[in-house]
Length: 83
Image (cartoon, rainbow, N blue to C red; front, side):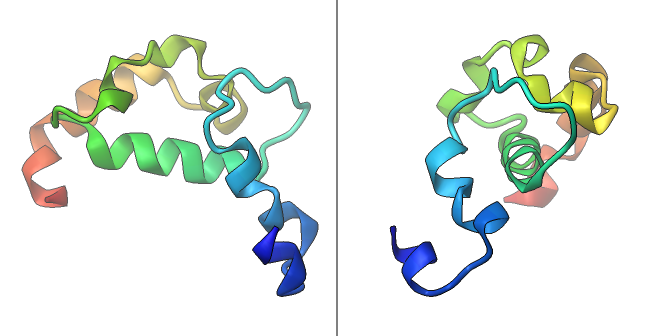
């Protein structure tokens, strides 16, 4: 993997490997959670396929202390700002 070859720390180098694994079972938040949730927040209100996911099944929301439904509802009115 290119990030490992470029000597990125393991906690960052693993992000591309796990970015689409939404049901990870971890005890604590990690950088993958941050990137996943950030990406989902950016596509709110668009026709992006990630909006079709059931956010309640994305384990990173719980680790970050976010309510997935509230996160989507809160961001929807601001969706145009992200484009």
